[in-house]
Image (tube, rainbow, N blue to C red):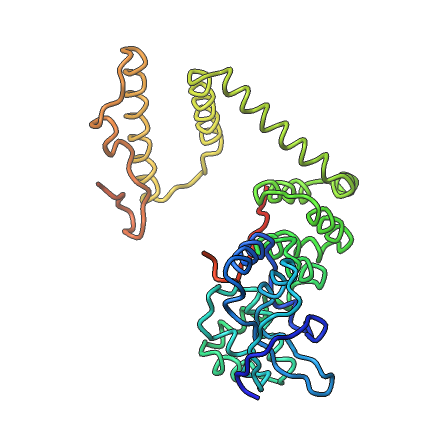
Length: 333
């Protein structure tokens, strides 16, 4: 029973590998529009489960969902006979949608658990080195189940799951669950989410609880503050922004002056003196431009301040979607 094309009703399909795919509503809608216009061009991949009189869906979870949303009664499938080989074909085959790292990790984890595969055997099967397989398995096995479920449902991105939700869940599982619930129903940009987590890490326990209980208030406050900053910037104009930048420079110089270390090596002294000389030249140019109302020239801007040393030691340098899909979500504040 290899490579047979059949039509399957949804109740006949076992979705046991559903968690290995990250759903993306936008991708599903694109696939659905293609199906409505051209029909289902690519079959899903299944293997028979004779004992249960069903079919196990290996590949095509986005296509299946798109068919459901378009009101189709059946889905076109290609039936293969070997579950392990079918999973491997998803990992190493010519996919029209490149799998995300977390999807690869979930499939590798299934192969390891269901078919008792070692790290070495997995690496050989997928044509990768052991370190690649190890990194993928570590990724999926380090995430709490609640975070994996949110990933699979398309609620959050891999970035948000690994950088925000996973460490939050390790520290406070109930707070992570509350944030996942909020993200399920609200769109939050990655920048906003990152700022949220930065604020959370620095806050006291009571403040943490407040922002977890009422995240909407926190995100509204972020938006209001950003709008106020934009308004102040417009009011100040370029002259005000120039003075703000100059004040920042003065503050940095004061800090450096008050924290000069007691000892510098000769090499460090030479490098610092070179930088200071460049700064003095820039200050002189700035003073001249302000007093003479002169615009900067190309000559003025050429190598006034030495570039930072690299690996040279001490000397400064001179001179139409094909019925498949992917997932993208929030990134952090």
